[in-house]
Image (cartoon, rainbow, N blue to C red; front, side, top):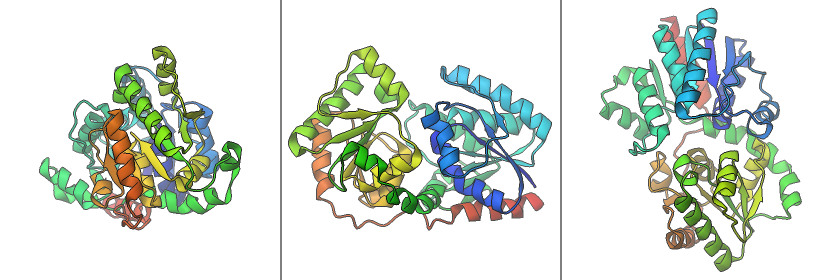
Length: 360
């Protein structure tokens, strides 16, 4: 069995890292193909070093662009490599343009596709990620659903149940593997003069939030209201896209500490020690839930409804007063929820399933 692991962004590297680690230790015939969709050191290269992962065999260095440009460049590059390598199966994770392009290139070459984190749905077709995940699920051969709810989404869409496997989410594997390492480090807390439970952590990067001045401005106003009421420092490691938009729109948020993007271990350290997290990221919603840190999601929908069902998360939208209201609500909740994303053995299950189905 020859496996191609196709990735391109920071969340994909993190969530595929436990699978790559097992492939490496088990001496499997595999290679990593990096699209280069995320290409800065802090958003990409440092993750391979910190997570002790082998360097990708291929890097397309696709870079950023419109959705069409990114997808097209990655599709062309992936097809050439898959034609030369002829793996039995590719693995993609999540909902990025890399995922869609990788799966599409493979399926047209009659190469099997395994989709890690299949079945997530926000039911909002205005999100480009929603389109990517729906298409990828419907052309994949093996759908590794993180939860039963994700499996139900796939079954409702008519996908054959024999192609669906509930494995848990590999984000749990990654967090459990790296949490202790991150907590032993105190670099970022010392540098920012922070202590446990004494600050709020923010991530805002999604296209629908930062590419519209009114939405981005409202979110920042909401953060200012929170700062005035609670007096906690608000730490915002800013995504390059959001930084560009902030400058373009002339937004100058007050009472918010904006810092450069962080490597994985420092970000995990900030997450673990935060009093509360505000985010529009799906992966951060999951990590907050696993780490038992209250989360307020700056969106009107989520493809991680399990976090809301266990009371770890709440949807706030982007209206300033509602963001403040939801922060008050989450600060009152006890951190007693259960983790709905599995036991940290998802990567082990995925590889066992591949061994079984590819051999037959």
